[in-house]
Length: 159
Image (cartoon, rainbow, N blue to C red):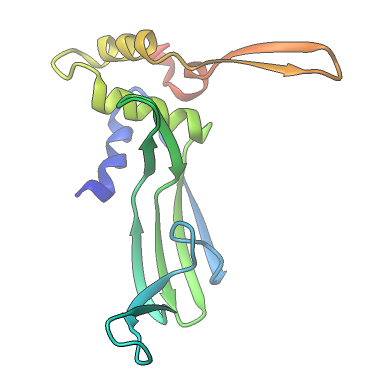
């Protein structure tokens, strides 16, 4: 299932993500809105309206899109599993280190590197073709820093 494709990151050069649990009143969106479902609108035949879920599961896969080209990946939301029981929610969120950089680099690694090569060779291709080097500036302190986010998201063996 495409919803769970992100789990393949666990068997890749990328650091494993962590689980973050939430238990309490409904507060976690799936992804943008609280858990809801669509029903036929009794006042407008042929139209539907949304209502809050009373009981149910939601499985939310990794949210991403491409922007300017087929390899210009943009992270949108992290995967999660949500269970709602009346006004209560139990959610499990999959949290990666440096989420934006992690998932964008993983998407390139997964979809756009040569799968006939080893993980190390694919990672070298990924770093060459999809660099994650960012320069940050602090104007008030007149300083800047260059960060290679691969050093933050990859297992040490692949650095």
